[in-house]
Amino acid sequence: MGATQIAANLAFINWVVLTGLAFGSMGAVLLLRERTAATRGYLSFTAFTAFAFGLLALLSDLGLPTTIEGLPFQPDPAFDTPRRLALVVFVVLALAYTVAMARSRRATVLGLLGVTAGMAVNLIAALGWGGQGIGSLFLLTQLLALDLAIGGVWAAMILGHWYLVTPKLPEQPLILLSRVLLVIVAVQIGLWVFWLGAGATLAGLGGSPFAELTGEWAFFVWMRLVIGLAFPLVLSWAAIQTAKTRSMESATGLLYINVGTIAAGTILAAGLLFGAGLLV
Image: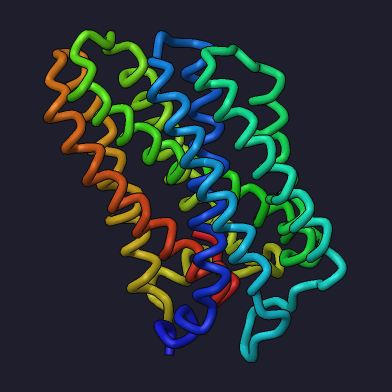
């Protein structure tokens, strides 16, 4: 029954993955542009992927169902148009930022506006899908965390690959991004413990602490922890250590694996969110 409910919400899961890749990678480009000597080619290519994922997310959003039987929440259609308009703004800004990166411009304001547009999309989505109460706050927090993780690991994987064709690139950009990713995953583990310990759902607080560890959704909850959080934490730490020694092929291999594990964890988290209203 659990897998069936998750499968029924694939459109929303797809939306979370695509927006996460778009917004998170945009943030990673902004960070590396401001703090490191990452190359123009890497920055412009990764910014372009943020634009491409954003465009796919917009197309995905246009196809989201308005009602699904058995959904733990009912989307408020009043937020559909504002959410889509915010996505359009992000796509336009991401394209403009890509052009700016290709021309070696700093474009700090443009990058900040793009990241802000991504946050606005999440905020509007949280208000429309979270009931506009504490559930909306929980949903916003979860969406932002998922964005940072999946978008960050995508950008880190591309950066690791960049070292294979740009051997003289200093290791600082990859170390910084891997450290940020490590912190993000650690925060997600903390959220996992908090959500379950507080009995938090989209409906709010009040559930039995850690009841979902043995309930109907226990298998997916544990898989979220083991595959989507604990394993990526180890891989992120290992990527930092290999990058420090300039073993860039090893670091890139670890980040490739990390993309898969974090993507799987994001899908599990989104599936539980929209299939059962659970925060993990």
